[in-house]
Image (cartoon, rainbow, N blue to C red):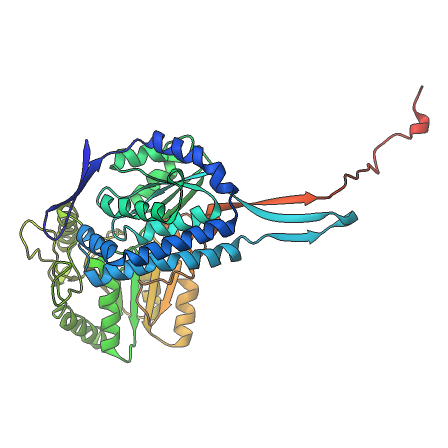
Amino acid sequence: MDLVSFEPATGATLWSGPTGDAAAEVAAARAAFPAWAAESVTFRAETLRRFANVVRNRENDLAALIARETGKPLWEAKTEVGAVVGKVEISINAYMERTPQRRHEAALGSKVAVRHKPHGVLAVLGPYNFPAHLPNGHIVPALLAGNSVVFKPSEKTPATGAMLVDLYREAGVPEGNIRLLTGGPDEGRALAGQEDIDGLLFTGSARAGQALHRQFADTPHKILALELGGNNPLVVWNAKDVAAAATIAVQSAFLSAGQRCTAARRLIVEDGPAADALIAAILKLIDRLIVDEPFAEPQPFLGPVIDNAAADHLQAQFLDLMMKGGRVIRRLDRPREGLPFLTPAVIDVTGIEDRPDEELFGPVLQVIRVPDFDAAIREANATRFGLAASLVGGSPAQYDRFWGEVRAGVINWNKPTNGAPSNAPFGGVGLSGNHRPSAFYAADYCAYPVTSSEAEIARASISEGLRDPNMLED
C-alpha cells in the first residue's frame, strides 16, 4: 500500500510512494558497512562536505518542499536548510574533539592506544516538525563515524526524507550506506526490531520513546539514543523590560506553531500587577501575529500544525483544561474549516489542582501564577520531563539558583526556551531523553572507544606463583 503525504496548508496531495521493507534495507546497509567503515575519517568528512555543498545548491528546492510538507513559513524552512548545511562542519569538529585518537607511553616500550569504531548499522527515526534538520543531526555524525544508516522519516513528511537521502547520494555517499525506509508506525516498529541493527537514534514523542525503551530492554548491546519532548517552563520574574519579556514568551511558545520540543508550555509568573502587565503585552503581540500558509505575503509568523488529527487533539486538550477549571485568556480557534490552522492560545491554569503533565504540541501557553520565587522553582520542576527551561528577568543570584535547582538539559537566562545552539550538547532528563545528548555530543553515541595495549615485540614473564624449575621432578 502506498504512503501519501499531504500539504497541511491546503490539503493537497504532495507525494506518494510504496512502503518499504525494513529487513531488506537493513540487509543492504549491512552489506555496505565494511567498505565505508574502512575509509579514512578524512574521506568520509570530505564526502559530507560535498553533501553540504549539494544542499546549498538545492537550498530553494529543499526549503520549498519542507514548507509545503510541514506547513511552516518559507522563512523558517530556509533556516532549517541552513541548519542542515551547518551540521556538517559542526559534526566534523565534534567528532575530532569527542573521539580523538590517543597514544600513551607504557612500560617496556609498549604503548596504550585509544581509538574509536563505528557500531555498524544504525537506524534513524525522524520527526515531522524538522524533517530535514533533526534526522540530519543523527545521520551526519553516524556516517562520519563510519556507520551505515537506515533512515525512516516520519510518515507525515516522507517527501522531505526522500529528498534528503537523494542529496546524500548525489554527494557521493554510497547507496548502501544511506538507506531510505518509507512507511508508518508498523515499518518503524519493524525497523527497531531488526536483529541486525546495532542501534537506533530517535527524535520524537515521549510516548514513542518509552515504547522503544521497552522494545530495547532485552538488547543492552545495542545503542539507543532518545531525544524526546518537554513540558518546558518559562519563568518571568521582575522583568525590567516587559516588552522584551513578552517577545521572548511569544517566541518560546509559538514559533513553529508550537511544534518544537523546546517550546515553552508553561509561563510561570509572580501573581500581581507585573503578571497582568506581562500578559497584556503578550496578548498585544499575539494580536499582531500572522497565521497563514507558508508562501503568503507578508510572511506569516506561524502556519498550520501538521494535520487535522493533531489540531483536533490539541483542541481536545485545550477543552480538557477548560473543563478542569482553566481560565481562557485567548481562545484556541480554528480559523479555516477543514484545515489544521490554529490561532495562538493562552489559558490560566493556576486554579487547576491536578494539572496534566503533558506536552501540548502546538500553540498553547499555560499561565501559572505563584506567590514567590521558591514556588516558581517548584512549579518549574513539577513535571516528569526535563528538556528546556528559561528564566527571564531575575537577579544573577536568582539565575544561579534557577540553574542549580531546575532539572533540565537546556537552561537559559533572558533567552527563549527554544533555538538551542548546534555547537553544544542537546538533550534532557526525565521523560525528555535517556542521557544520550545529541547535537555536539552525537559523536558519543555514533562510535565506541577501543583501548589497546600494543608492543612491536612480544615480551612476557610471570614473576610470582611458579614453582622453582630446579625443584621439578624428572
